Image 1 (tube, rainbow, N blue to C red):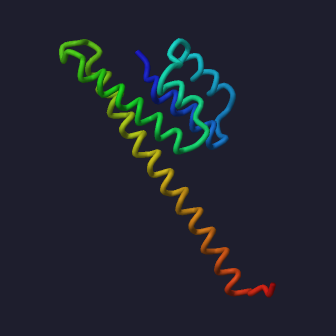
Image 2 (image 1 turned 90 degrees about the vertical axis):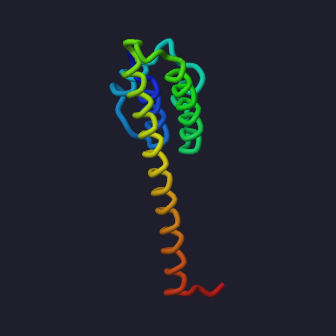
Length: 123
């Protein structure tokens, strides 16, 4: 059992943020061997937050379908539901990250405008 969605998300975030070390990347890639298709592959290769959001949403849909098709007596049912909850939590975390990033961009725009108002430049 493995939480492919979370490992793929970690790799995608490493791409987007330029964070993480090579050993962490290698460990995640090893765990995902044989599972790089569809939304999992999209997450691994994501180069933007919007790409991550899109592929994470697709992974969430796939996982919801997997849970819906499972029998509640299946020994993996609870674990799979737990994966679903964690992917939903990750989706909200990515949304917060995007909103915070947009706030930083807006704040920089306001700082730029304030500098021009405080120190006008004649053209």
